[in-house]
Image (cartoon, rainbow over all chains, first blue to last red):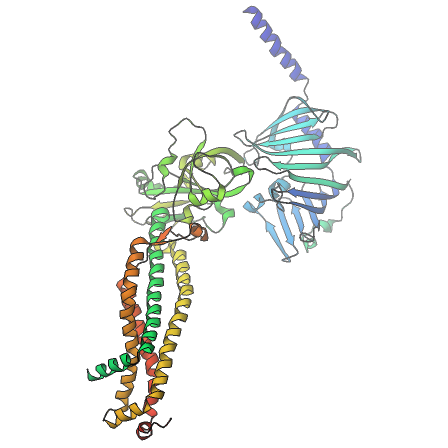
Length: 246
Length: 391
């Protein structure tokens, strides 16, 4: 009996010691933010929506300033060309050239999918730092694509949030998440984001390809591929103006 | 009486031509009654089923509820009014919570309306007793209609993932088990809908004691409740009635065309008769009949076509009407997809008002059609008519 208690104590002590070697969840989130956030960003990307029946690819150009202002213009295909989206703080406007109208997306409409993708307007607009929304704890180490990762488990600390909990696999050297999973309160997995093709750009690590997947339905998900990206360039103020939509 | 005898003799003497006119007119007469009866039967069935399955004796709607705005559905959940607590306890008021969700049958997503209702309710025909979770299953029990079953491919005992958002907008997902598939002819409680136990849905979505609509029984008097608007049966079935009325108008175009063809035949026969029987007209006037009496003779002759058509129509129409009124007319199985309450069999309704109204209408319109060509007689010169001179 004494031996068993001794072994168990040793085991838990070992876990405790091991746990102490893990970085804090918040410090990891800070490092991720340092990589992913910038004063401004300009990117050209393609979004491939893989539905059960067909695959659609759209190209777009996006200008972003901090986490509050984003302007996106769709460049192709012809059907979507000229569609523009402007996000200012928590407001979103959408201009459609076919109707020549600008509409504000608000309320429950924000829950709709963006261009039929696995992303909702709300997902796209969520700019609150994760640190403010979740309690993050590093719970272990795992390897993804030969990269050693910290496994970060996050549980919501606020009630008005899309996903109750998330899991992040954060690259131990580059401090970029390689995989993210979103869960419902019941523990059912809802979405998964895989970040690939991590490149060093202007001194920061950044994923050039992201795959968003709704785990409840079949299909390959939505693939977001960045072809060009630059950080901290000056963006003229008129880009984030409503008049720029038309 | 003498005039009637003469009219009858002339008509029968016309032989096949008369019977052809009478047959065509009787066909349109039977068709008009049958089509109207079919729509009236459908109307009755749709109204009866809608009341039994969806409306009961009227509904209170949350003032924030707009069935045509699915984006605002989740915001329409309103606390149950205290003043109806007693009626709620006795089952005379049934709250229904309506919220949006998504199911994932066979790996595809499908938007649904989640409707929470008490399993012990008795106001609607829905088999909600199946929602009582008697076993130890952790899956949420749900019932769906046959239309929804067809849409989603879900059958009894199937388990499917349901995803929804709680009152704070946080995603939640859990498996539900289809504990029953009910057959209804009311798409408003079937297509795109999943019925769940009220308390479970309230708990799932963090909407305790909230409802979107309240269904009222006949035993409860209508009251004014703050934050709720009462809709009576007339108001709730307004769209259904309008749809049926528009269908009736659409259908009437067919039998109006048919009736016009029959009336055209009578008009043609009358015009020809007046042209061919000028000597007879002249002789009748010479024998002492006034032109007005001769006009009446010809008008009556035409009108009698309609009377004979009524008799002929009754001979073959009545057995046909009785057969379909008893056995019904089978409707195609997919007819419910139109969004209207259509049973798998429609029993035509033949109220006396419909039959008498149609008879009077056809006789009157035939009389008018017969009178129009007969007016020419008034302009005829009797002497020229007796000589058979074309006028």
